[in-house]
Image 1: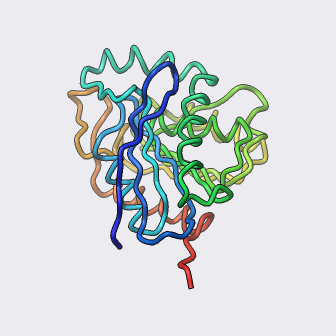
Image 2: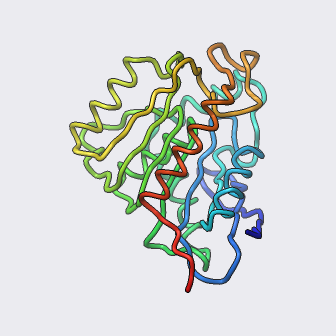
Length: 242
């Protein structure tokens, strides 16, 4: 299916964000998906994910979190990402700004939007849910973040989460805290643990040189993507025009 793409700039968090919008063939309104990147920022990996979703018939926006920057230095990335992850209001501001861009696209069906994300971008997707945004689904990879007490009860859609069994950043205690929060809030949640995978296992260009405990796992990366697409197919199916 032919896909049209364009770069979109918009303000958020005191920065000019640079997102990647992908549109499916046609002129009709379609369900839409926000795609959040991991801490280093938006790169071609998430852009290709947006393009892949557009090929399936979704309007897709891979949003930015770092003002157009990609942090190649892990210390610089952590210095930016850790304060952001500790500030739910900042994460929500970034998420709402991207959501506004996606909703303003004429091809977007504003009543049918999902949010998926990797690492920090997944945490932002979860914060949109905790803020009560009307989403059809939330999918995260390597983002088992917990929120402020009681706010998970505002999540109004199914939540799917994937994590590597050997992820030192999202260890078993973090998994337990996340699932306890979802369960207590009455959320329709699922957690998939990918055996032998480490943090950022989905990303082809990462390795231990970035941070200890970070490594690509090709087989599980493919499985996690299939799981994300399955979540969207279940909760936000594309209905082709007659």
